[in-house]
Length: 250
Image (cartoon, rainbow, N blue to C red; front, side, top):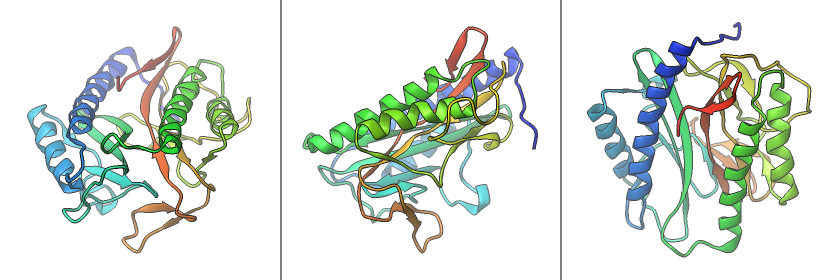
């Protein structure tokens, strides 16, 4: 599959879908509290997407059953919302959300603390993971490579004693949820696909407090840390422009 560069008009359409993703995530961030279930978040997201005139990107994608991925504590990505999964004080929950509007996709993720009693280690995990996302975004410039983006993420994460997940990576995005190129959160500067004007990529560090190894649960979706350590996930869609990286999911 070839890499697709977008026109200014297409990027503007993607900015509109990105804005809806952000509105959904902002509402969900406010809803996260002890006693709330991940199905409560799912239902709120579905209502908000409908209200804003967008369709969910994830539901039905390879038969995935929900509009959100909600991943708690040691869950890395693709956690399936459930009425049985009730958030507790001291948890962290990663919320991954995607929509399609007028044929163009938006995709973003946040990790949110539950309650006010987060441990210092988990606070640091969230801060470093989000900071690594912005390091990766800063590297998303015309003439740089995918390896520059991944190396920027990896260097910050590992300097802080955390590890980068290898099996799940960022991706191109546009009229499909997943396009070329793959955008790993690790890499070597100067290696991999060159970034060209008009490319749109989803950069999404997934960072573990322990080792990088992962496994997938019996539901065939939920990925967890192999050692039971905690994991955080932040994501933005970013257009590569002559003026520099443009975040579409602000």
